[in-house]
Image (cartoon, rainbow, N blue to C red; front, side, top):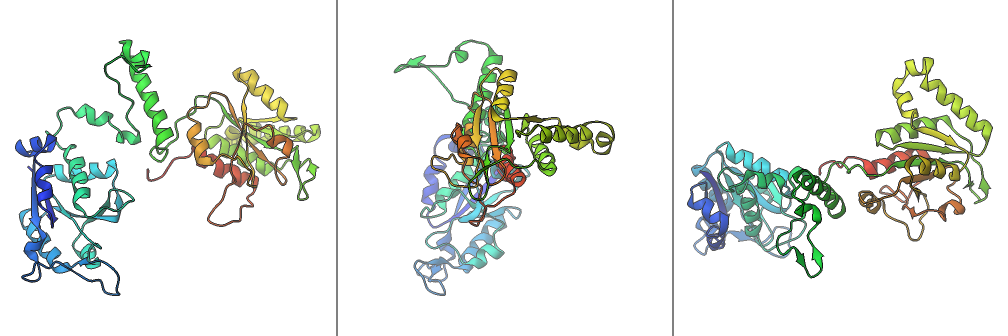
Length: 423
């Protein structure tokens, strides 16, 4: 039997919690034991005092360390290997992964002790010396740790053997494998003009599973883009373009900029790393296009290929064209669909789309996408006016955003297609 002990000023809250639903069955069948410890039983005086005013001034009362220590020692005497958890807004965010870690701890025969603070929280020395783990259930404040502890207890309990009847239902639920569950439907087949998707009525289990997988991934990306570590691969072709004309100089005059070898190599490697199909180099001067092709050929065969095969692999996606129209025609010819242009700039423009919004939208786009970067001092207005979307500038923690185009491209690709750490 797995032991959950709750140290609280309000043990009556847990009587109803453990007397209903699956928690009642789990307790009744002996799968878990839920016990409360009244914090006032360890008060410092006959008046039942367990808290005091904070040093340094301020509002509210703070839980004293002595009652907390004695209450935890009492709980530990019953279950020495139990982990002590403090529910606090500053704690580790509660995610399904955390619940699994706690459930693993319990499956090894160890219990959990929950310390539920009230008022202004606990003396810091409690957290430093008596607590094993601090957990927060979200970025908001409630009146005490009781409700948060119930959330954790129920989340852990349902992962333990015997509490839920169907283990498959756990595996398919939201937040397992970092994604939301697919939409569910039941009778009636049509409700106020909204019908159940035909595929769910087809009896074709392979098609149903494919639909559920697709909807789960799409809904997760649209509703909770913070969840998946990796963006779902868009169903359409994603390309990038480095434009050398028409661009502007420092004064805003229309110019043609020079091709630089390092841009070709570095942006090709970034584009290849993040799964883009093509990198177009747009330049109107034939001599420079021919020179760039020769450089490309050097690394794609002979000594260059032998010396650095990784660079050759990246340069395979490079295509050098005289103008934007030729680029669009090439994509339309290969895919059969006219692409959308998505322009970038270091300047703020009205109607811009945030990178996060575009990242989410990529799960649903139906046309090939071309992310367009400008050289010089940026794309000319005639290019911006052709855009289907314009992305907001990239910023760090300061107002300075004068990035090289190859740096901007790498950062943009990572924000749009990169893995989300810690999700």
